[in-house]
Length: 596
Image (cartoon, rainbow, N blue to C red; front, side):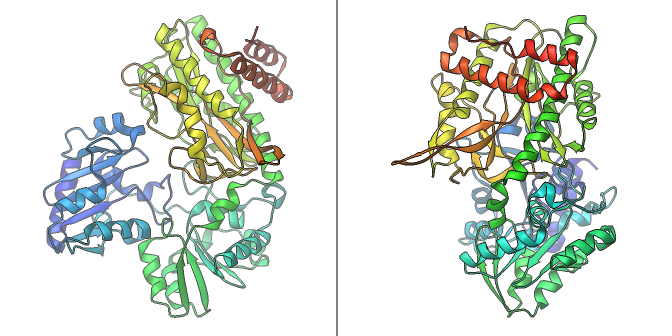
């Protein structure tokens, strides 16, 4: 079926069921960012394959909302579909709620899959449609249409991250969580987010591409915990360890009925943004449960890494950096000899280098290997049949990362493949200046990402330039690549604390011309404490040379050049033991000082 056929079939089903509109989010029952193939309903229905987007279909119109990372991709993939692209946060573009409020008939019905739609989204839609007296119905239209070729629910073998790597046992983490819940006047919690379940129980699997998670829920009670998971894929040894930590296992599909019938009196905290509408309605049926909405405390707990996790992250980055060095060596060799390479082949080669590293579980997200103008698409991924041939000129942007048993990595480097235009060199230099501005900032305790984000953009703002995304995001520990609640963006109000990690990845993206991004991971560390309070800063712990060949040194300050030299000295120091003699000699040249 084409997208046009699918939308027509959906409208026919809507008419038969008396629905005036259908809301299709990019989510699964756990509100996961990277969806298992089973729940990529929005992508299947619309043809737009980006990771973020919302599709709305009424009897007469259809529209898809996505953010600036995907404008170019979405425009291409939606062409001829009859679906209007809504460029989020752009002047004159209505929000999803505004669009629906304008198009839904008075007293109409908006259908959505309540199992895959968060409570916060439902509440927002109800508010927007209140004036129209429209009602929301929990009805999954897409599953009835998507029968042929739909992937099954994943159920890979579960395993446990041992406390020697995780820092704390599941029992210890449950104790800490109960203490945090007490501060929020609760003694129980429904944990729905896969990254929260993974951290809480040290549970890992391979259910979600690029994320080492198991599809599971955890109900934390005052004196016990219940894990809902496909028990057939949990080895006996794992079950034994979890049960010893006070965790009882149940079949994954039993979660709704269990919540509705649980007899233990509970003051239960749920997170509206991470809990499905279907499960909340089940909890509301249970008179033994007193509900309160609030933030998921696990998100902040796992965002602040302990000493064991920090040491593991740094070790993973050393091995990852060694793979990146070998990749750049091969890239330069091919450009110098004229040996052909494509974006797709380069991406696969980098993946093979990572997989050769000790304890590598795979990539942490789909590698972006984008040559020339392709790099203007922030989340471009090369396809074998359509990818570009690399030429000994211009830039290759490579954004990639690895999952290891002791950490998760995310790194971007933009490489000069040969001669560059003055515009390309200036863009590269400006991006590095932005990167350094964020990396070397010192800030008072209580400062959040929204404050530091301004520093990263200021160099571009002076020239009337900007990028349509945040400057950085947290990174999980053997976990999700986009971790909150901290981040570097204009809207992030979570104060940084020592132990938090964040990426530093400003960029310049000019459609049809170029894309430049430089990304390191940073660790928040204490700097000093005076009568004015505590002050924090950042320590880079991505160990990989930054290409200095494109730089227009005259645009950089001495402080910036000295920062770059100190960073490269750290790269040399940290990677020395992971490279052979030839690789070490190459790295020494790549890290040569630029401040004179």
